Amino acid sequence: MLMDYVINVAMAQLFDINDKVVFPHAETLMIEPFKEIWERDKSKGKVIALKEFAYIEFISSMRKTNPYKGYSEKEKSSKIIKDLFKDTKWQPDTLVMQGINKVKEFQMEASVTYSYFLAVKESVEKIKEFLKTVNLAERNFKTGMPVYKPKELTSALVDTEKVLANLKSIESKVEEELFEETRNKANKEISIFADPESLNM
Image (tube, rainbow, N blue to C red; front, side, top):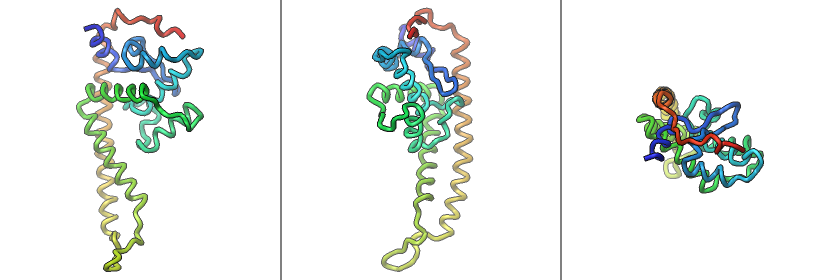
C-alpha cells in the first residue's frame, strides 16, 4: 500500500534538525498526526507547527542531533517547553502526544534494543531520585536504629555506576541500529508520490 511505503521511508528519519530548528520531510506530512498538525496551523511560516514538531522530536528522538537527549524524562519536557515556547503554560495536546507515540513506535520498529534501553533508563532515574531524597537521619520508630545503613548506600552507588555504564552501552547500540536503519532507507528510492509543494509555508 502507498501509505505503508511512505511510513517505511519516513520511519528512518521524520525530521531534519538544524540548530534546534526542526523541519519535516515531505513524506512526514503524509502521515497522521503530523499531516493534521501541519494543516491546522494557519500562522505565517507555520511557526506553531514547527515548534510542535520540535517538541515531538526533542521529547522522543534517540538521534545524536537531539540536544535534549541526555535529560531525564522528568526534566526534559519542562526544559523543552521553556526553550521553544517561552511559555511554561503550554502543554502538548492530543495530536502532539500522538506524534510522540508515533516517533517512539518508529524507533521501536527500527531498533530491537530500544525498549530495553527505555526500561534501563527508567530504572536509573528511579535510583537517582532515591539517592537524591534518601534521609540518612531517618530512624526505625520501633528500634531507633537507622533505616538506611551507610554500607547499603555505598553498595547502591556502586550498582548505579554499573547500571549507568550498561545504559551508555545500550544507548550506543540503539543509536547504531537507528543509524543503520536510516542508511538502509536512504539507499532506497524516495517515494514518487511525495509532494514537495506540501512544504510550502
